[in-house]
Image 1 (spheres, one colour):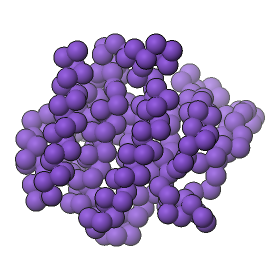
Image 2: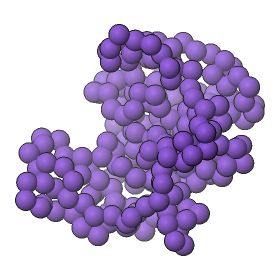
Image 3: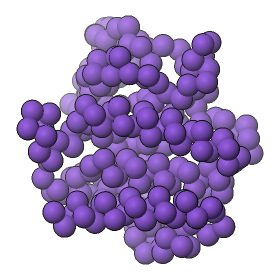
Image 4: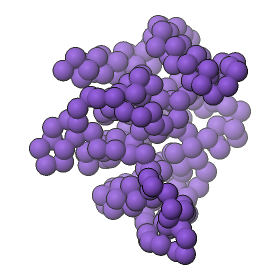
Length: 226
């Protein structure tokens, strides 16, 4: 639920995305969207625990086998969203949840309130790579995002890369930065994220982790140059 007095409705976007993905695997069913008194409400399937909750249960990290199984499903979920011309812009452990019942082996993607078009659905032309207001969760946000640039598919894939590192190592290099306030923390985290070499970011991880991150960074650079 959200107040219907909000100027920017995230539930309005959620309603649109759930309708677009109603035939997709790994997306909760939506049963209702509308006004209830002073609120907008949306009713979805009851889901199981999020990956954030499961990380706490598993003492902060998953086995490599579990990470790879999750990785396959995360890519499938995001690919479905991208096929509808939208990017998620807030991929994090809390926004991937396990299903219940006969869906208990299926990873679900939720919380589309910050989703945004990355291309024109009619012409397939990308949106201009212009400056945007920051959106997402800083820990997992892409480099383009912290630079306040428009996000594309590569940015969601970059966030998934940070999730993989977190799942394996238990945290990211910028996770425990000490700062005097939110603004300084944003600046310090952004500075480290922009400057850390990939080999240091992926130290101690299987080589495939750095291959993936390198591939995503290359795609982002090519898109930015275009």
